[in-house]
Image (cartoon, rainbow, N blue to C red):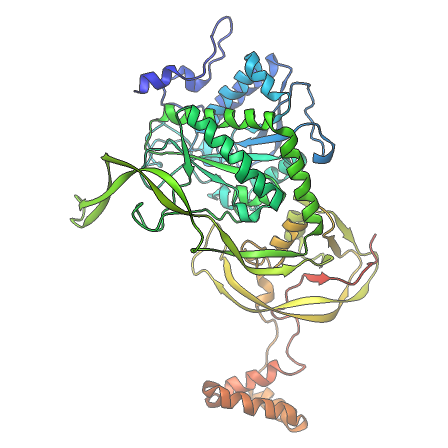
Length: 582
């Protein structure tokens, strides 16, 4: 079976120059190293004027991030979507270098698209951009053991980067140089379609590839309709014709298909396609199946990319129109979701080709263990839950006011292409500010941060002093959704959630009890309403009534002595018209 699949790989004849990729020269179970991959693309660059390879920023490894641009007319520089004649497809490989199918498939794909006449035509309406290996750091950390669940290749890279970050959790927070370089590259190209190539973990089933598409409810209506009514059906039909049917990413509610069914993946902006969605880009994550041999996994990745490029070429005008409509919708949108919840009452049926899940005694523990019986395949209709409803929404402000002290946040806004203006003089502005009412914090670090969740806020209007050079981020541009989902504290992947504003959560001043006792007593004597409020609160809260220290704290927090900046989120929402900006 393996030899038959190997013989079907799309190879070109070697003489007079050997254009086989390192994977094609191997035994079907090897993947290109970082050095081999970049050298191969540079060889293509030297031979074909339609290809340009260049450095596109830095990585934590010290090695550069590369981009490969394939353009039939030699237009290798990006143009804004409204001014360009063809869509841009961006393929990213090797974010997890132990999942390298996309690395090898893309090398063969780029070669074939310039060498084969029939394939060259597919680039007449498409500009192709490839990131050969995104996690350069992990690709250099090569081993043969860390992907214990996976059938090949013989050696591969490591999931973590040089800082042991999972780069597919770093798109918004951008702790890595890799993520900042990607954000700059993405901002320049503003691709219409983005593909991030992976290998799955999890259940066993008959498919060679499962697919995560941008969650439809998070897309603008025009793009959601285009994705579900045109693009996904075309991809499914194309892959069916190549005898490699697709299924939605396999995430069961429970461990086996006999549970509730498949559940859609809600990709928040920490993930690649969650980040790209903020800018009206349709995204896909390909997940080849870990238990299939490596050669067919490379082949199915090649096939998917080829089917996608062919359809984008064919449907370029409709895709461009849908994206233009999405941009117009963004400019008009007033309410923005910040958090989502799966609607368990909404399901569609999908025909799923699985293997029966069974249990047997574990040879390790003697306890029941799950296994999939490949002698008992099945195909049956199961539920697919892929409808999400907003649980928190926020109205669109005219602008955000950002004190210049918050440099880490401002750096990330700049990298995303947010137009920033600066106040030209000191001034006092009345704007809507939040006080953080409540939040939960993970007891363990997650990707270098103690993540905040379940954030609630108390909005209020305040007149606050701003200084010359403080920043204004307006929302009358294409970065509006990015700004809202990073600067609104309740958003799942906001910069508050990632801990960039943790210093506001700590008081800087307090009191000595024996001194404040007299001050508090005087406050209550001079303010009967305050005393009445305290007595009422004591009646409602027995713990407060029994604690003298708690009552002192209550008086302090309701007095002028309590610092107004404690728990006050420093970024304000502006709705007041013109501002004195440079």
